[in-house]
Image (tube, rainbow over all chains, first blue to last red; front, side):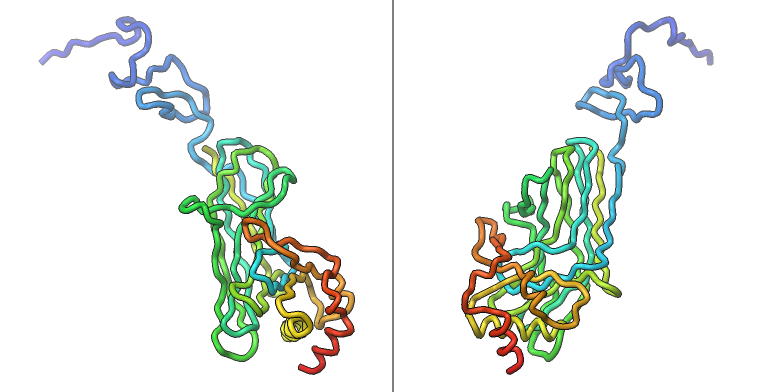
Length: 197
Length: 74
């Protein structure tokens, strides 16, 4: 059975649209990805949702004790400068924390400062309330309760200015003391990852 | 230091109930007047429940001497 052949380099002019199985492109950029920029359009893209940078700050000193139900700043922070306004920042913090007061625990929030404009609490995107997480609860017992705590958040700062992410702490109820630690044998780790669009 | 902090907090509340603060510290083993002078006293909160603080002690009822006296009773 004989097959007819078509010389694609001579028989077709222009580009084949995406809707017809083509790319709609006459050329691309070396080293870049092919990415849909619309339902039927493709273009060269410098990235493919890859990690742009990872910054980690190890908190070796700087404990904070808090006795208020309002949130106060701690030493646990990481600074990152996004390379593009379309980037997101994935935050991963881990640290020791605890309380020495019965029936009390610490609450933690992420706050963000952009370019020195001042800190504000990150909201959770669900009900617009600040992202918040509780620490180790101490029921009736003697002595200090200490345990690990991890905080994670996916932020969209929409800026290329320097962003500082800091943990704030508060007591969940009146009359007590809670702590966050950054000291020998109890380091804190604050990591920020830029995820490119 | 941890037990000292709890005594300190109780002493502060004894002298003035509802007086709250935050304190950054490192390797201190006990409360001291020098550490007392670095306290961030909470004076209020904004709409996000973020503390408004001052390093100037706003409570005349609370001095290091008085706090230390109360701590020694605990």
